[in-house]
Length: 486
Image 1 (cartoon, one colour):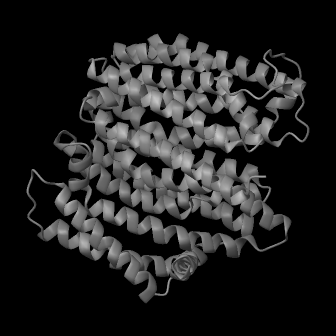
Image 2 (spheres, helix red, strand yellow):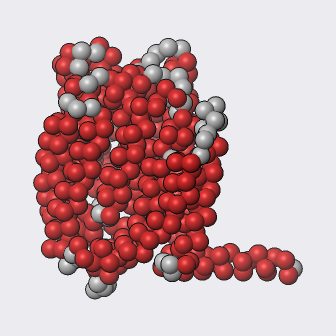
Image 3 (cartoon, rainbow, N blue to C red):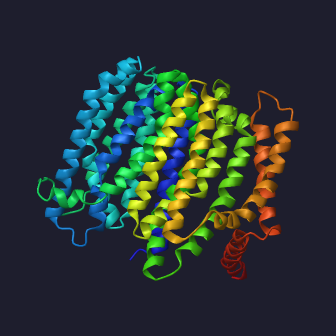
């Protein structure tokens, strides 16, 4: 039987390879598509992502957690998934004209029409994905997801080169979903039913209802700037913001893709074992902030050479937005796992309430700031992240008795490491006279110096992560020494 470590390794390989493929495509497409194209797709993509939350509505989770998954239960899940997908597709199709007129951009309407077709075909892959995850068939999922990612990227670049503009991204999304379903069905497990039925709908939908509402609120708050900027400013401004926010989200993507599948089961097991969740949560905050804060401070100080190296000079308007959003990212990272701990402690309602209460503050702040430009919107997001942190901290204290002073105490050493890490990038930013044709030079020098400072300060300050790195190094030397002795 495949070991747990091997399964986790395959899962990590799938997630990071998929992320790398899409990131490489972003670098290429940033040099082909205009900010207006990116902005137009970002507005439409938010609408699809928001409705995606309701399309799933716990169906996949139902398949994974169901104690005895019979053919009839699979057919019921298929029936529910098809109904939800068709409803969402119909909503997108019916509203496409309205949103096209609302933004004064026919491309938005065309993108939503294409996306409605994407929703209609999505259940034929998503249901099988849930079954593969239930059966821990991660090798199969690796083949399916990487094939889909390659197809998605290939179509996007090919159509972009042929002047399809924002539509190239919409058709790429359709191609990715279609290829996912085709490959998933080619590898379909024997005995898996093909035809759905529509019984037991309440049983299937009983899972994920409250959590879906909270997640939808968070997604709405996170993506609200794209909708507001597209209406108040223009699609190019959406493109600049989207590109800046994409860099900021890189850390969350790396952490969430690697750790989120583990966080909830980990804290749930701790609770079942009767262990103190507060101690382990504060330890998680300590490890998370020593990774996130240096990451964001380096990105903030090296934002200009980073944007120019990755995307080109035509994206310079994104630089001040990146610098401000880095502050928001640092605040957000403190409570990244908070809602997962609440759910693990059996308080999913508190997790949902925290997300629902936080969203209106964010939306109002963004709307007010939108008339003053992109930088004002970024400042509004910083303020809203502070408010969100306060709200989540209140619920967290209610849940596991972790207060603000506890969080400060857990983050002191991380703050010291962050200050040391910032020294070299700070010197590069303010004293390096870079060659405009080689923005990668100060970027690489700044990142290299920052990494050396980060690693050194970990041991000098005696951060707990240093001990884990030492153990990792020792464990790596053992098989190496054994090999040389042979």
